[in-house]
Amino acid sequence: MIAALVFTGASVLTLITIPGNLYDVVQGRIELAVRRVASQAKAGQLPPSLVAPARIYLLEVVSANGEVLARSLGRPRNPQLVALHPARPETIYTKEIFLSQKDVPEAHFLIMALTVDTPTGPATVYGATSMADVDRALKWIYVLVFLCTPLVLLSVASLTWTMVGFAMRPVERIRAEMAEITGKDLSRRVPVPDTGDEITHLATTTNNTLDRLERSAETQRRFVADASHELRSPISALRAQLELANTYPDETDWQTTGAQALAAADRITHIIDELLMLARLDAGAAVNRREVDICRLAEEQIHRREGSRVPIVLAACQACPVLGSPIQLDRLLTNLLDNATRHAATRIDVEAKVEGDRVIVTVTDDGDGVPPEARERIFERFTRLESARAKDKGGSGLGLPLSREIATAHQGTLTIADHSPGARFVVNLPLHTPPPKQK
Image (cartoon, rainbow, N blue to C red; front, side, top):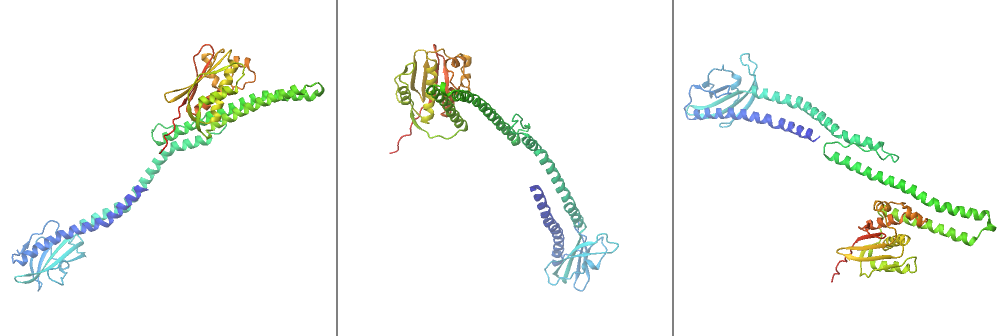
């Protein structure tokens, strides 16, 4: 479109300027010749035969009574070429005429007349030049502008259409492939052209987005399946207990049955709470964050666990401030201590300290430990090792994965360090340094 406008503008500008420029060149040429002859006539140095410059058809000097005082040779005299009579002396007069004589091959002429005073009286200097070259040049210009311009515009439009169509072909393939992708099959990918331009970047970004969508959908499907499986067991057990009690009401110990039902309900509530927190972390939901002292949080956890199966020993610690959610960080420590309590043989050690710009929290038990090949697998959701299932059949396999998600959400990490006997879980969180108070 821009090219067409530029080309059309150039054509219009050509039609406006070129004809005038050609006329100015011819007029300047003949005017120069006429004024040169007029200067000779005024000085009384007029020769009887005038030499016409190149492209000047005729030069002729005529007195006031019509006598030819001088003229250029080689051209027949034509009264029409000297029919222009200036009204005022020393003034150039110009006129275009068309001749039809058989002996004059050029029909279109530009004539110019100038009256001057000579020693023998007033005389008029005439000059004539053929406009055939100008007419021929204008004819070709008009042909080029009015015939070639539409052809060029049509060619440019066709070429632009073809090039744009070729350039947009990868986009159409991307669109067609995206239209075929549904939520049931996110494994398909759009074609990536090897042009290295913005379309390549678009296709690459689209495929990266589809990768994330596929992983998210797969995680959601697996999450729903695992959650359904984990919730089915306590619900089925609770239903069986209640059906049995309802079938044999007189033989049922309702106090024991109620306690068992309450325990099953507590397990279901625990699983649902962890599922909800995991869902919020997956969605990146915003939480209220403030400064939390990990050392004080550990002290409160241990105080609440006084009298547990194994003693929990907290090493002396100073303030360990981090910026985060108190609820989530408390859940992180709760899950780690619950896990250590299930596996510890005689003791659990907890340590919180500041190292550089990080807060390091370790929870160490003296149990059986975690095999090296399973140290990452235990952080997968609903994963429970055989030793864990043997010691606690009521676990959900969500505690450690949730703890790692909480650490990650706080720009930290949760890993297992080498330790014998038992296992050592290490939490690494950024140290929070409050900004200085303004005076």
